[in-house]
Image (tube, rainbow, N blue to C red; front, top):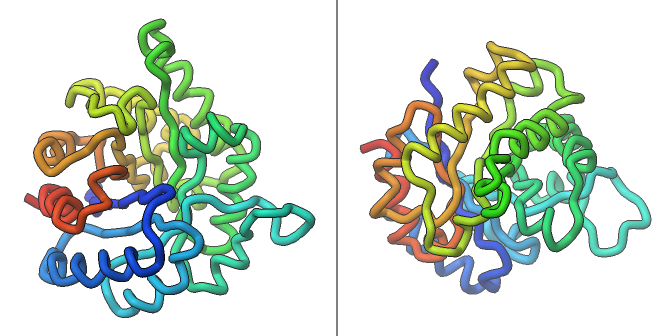
Length: 252
């Protein structure tokens, strides 16, 4: 089955509204003629509304970096799927390792968030990945199995087919280290095998992305692997030319 590559830039806690608008003004002309790849920006909450307005009619999707599982309630500082829909946002990243590590997000909460996003017709990008210590201890597959299986447990096969999973080895995020092509393919293939254990047909439709110090110089080799269907890009997504270079590598 042919899966359209997805290149998603995760800005994390970077860019004011003005910075975001400047980025889009430079980026859209670069990717205007780029076919065969889907593009997304995962922006801070403050920039979501302006970016949606600036990119209407373009091929660029705008995603949040987190969402709460409840529709409303006494959850100070949180944002619901209803609020994202109100802005015409296309989806959200959930479960990034920084959210798990610094903000205590659990596999159980992420399972609820997946359902919430899918029921709202929003695209979920579920992040999974192991730490350096876990890889050194030979626990990579055990960690990925726990994270994937717990998150997708409540999903139907039809729902499963609509998600995106991003494999991000924690030891390669923002460190300059990159998983070897073999390591990245092996982990992404294992992620797909866990999806297939739930529903084999749906697993073939799910796009599995690689994330972790992806740059234009290494993107081509990574994206050529059979189970890597795109990239979740951190630092390199802050520069329009770098993100364009990665997107171009996806269809080279």
